[in-house]
Length: 260
Image (cartoon, rainbow, N blue to C red; front, side, top):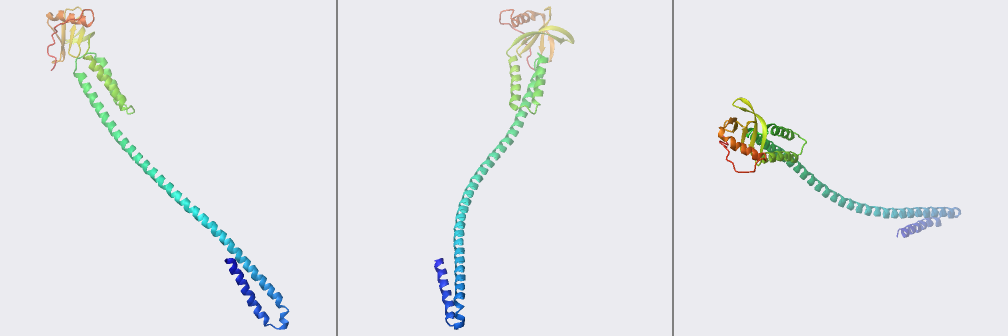
């Protein structure tokens, strides 16, 4: 269509140029063909340039439309990609928030666990301090090591709990055992070397190496006391059974007061 418009314009221009030429004088007619040819050539050149420009613009328009459609598709893809990334970011934010909540809760729980462990250790120390005086050095060393363990900030609460449970188990096992050990004790203000018989966590009895003196630990006065001589035989029998030198048998020991 554009080409037809250009041709029609060129024909109209030729007619316009031809009309004045017919009215000119014979003298000017000689030069008219040359001028007319020049004008026609210029008109054709102009039409050709216009048509070339129109063709170029048509091609450019096609290219621009193609680029526009590609840009639209790219924008749609980027919008979809952005939506997916936003969803991932929202999920990550939720995960981070949950981890922060767990971290805060873990810190709080660690503080609570530490307080509980310290409280249990304090009660264990009180029990040992008020218990029968046996294996004193061993038990105090165990408590001192426990205090150091509980004070370590880089040690996991589970590890601290394990050490504390081990100490509690050992203390509990003392109640199910009977043993005899030599020890130096204070009886009536005097040092006395004696064999100590421990009946679980129930009672402690002592006997001098020559067997002439016997006694027990009095929880009411928290002191070693001497018992009458009539108790020598039964205490000696109990010590022999504890040392595995005598068959196990029933004996009646003078337990006396076992609590304050």
